[in-house]
Image (cartoon, rainbow, N blue to C red; front, side, top):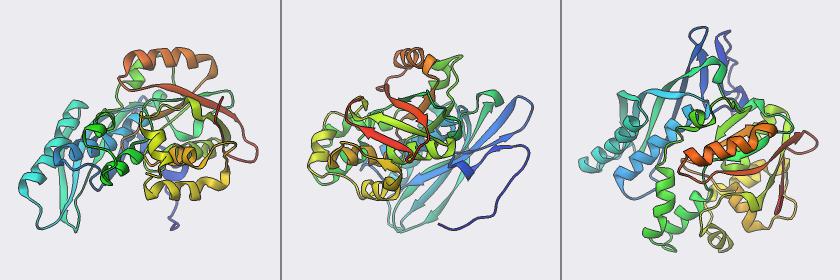
Amino acid sequence: MCSLPDFSDPLLLTGFSNNEDAGVYRISETEAIIATLDFFTPIVDDPYTFGAIAAVNSLSDVYAMGGKPRLALNILCAPDDMDDEDLEAILRGGADKIKEAGALLVGGHSVRDNEPKYGLSVIGFVDVDRVLINAGAKPGDSLILTKALGSGILTSAGKSGRISQEELEEVTQSMLTLNAGVTEALGDIVPHAAADITGFGLLGHLCEMMEASETAAEISFASLPLFEQVPQLSREGHSPGGSKKNEKHFGEVVDWGDLEGWERAIVSDPQTSGGLLLSVSGEDAQEALKRLKSALSTPVALIGTVQPLEDVFLKCRRQS
């Protein structure tokens, strides 16, 4: 990984130094802006659905920082021979999700490329005292996850023909679901740390949070919310290449305990438009869980705890 110069400013509340999901810059005594961008290649065959999922994934960074999206810019790459109807469908899918998020589409940029790619640059706003960061987890916190895991395994199985498009409907709907409403649902409960679960999987994003917070986490595999077919598909080896890369990259700072290979693959599974990972004070955890389950349409689960840092950032156990 290349070494970049350090950028600092008294008004920069957080940037990429702690592997944050976005940059946060104070613009007044009470308010800050959130800046982020994300784009990727198609995860599903339907152009409209791809555009919508890519937009939800991009908008998620703002929610992970505790804010609300306000402005969005399209980022589009497309081959010369791609149908105009498909390009329009991608952009329409993105626009519909931007509108659903209550943000404004204000422009964008497109280039020619060998394969399609789409995403957004997003600006959001957040109250200074409600900013959520990676680096705030504390020993005694409870870890809450707001979507099921296994999107990488399911989409890989779909591409190989192991499961049908109809069987992908549940995970598709999950990827299409905005991570909005978490802050509102929690009310006066402010998480100590937060991140959205995307390409590094639960494994990578949890390790990054613990490293930034100088703490460790212990999770119970049995407590993880999973899409129904994921355990069987993982046993059969339907994991994307990113899963092995994640396990290899972060494996040195993980105690896998009694987890088998297929279980490790689920923890390492790269997610597209995954849920939010929240580190909440232990005394507030059950109330936070209750509020989130009441407000969100996706599965919400308490998956582990934060502990003092010893020799690893993450301990995985089959049971709690």
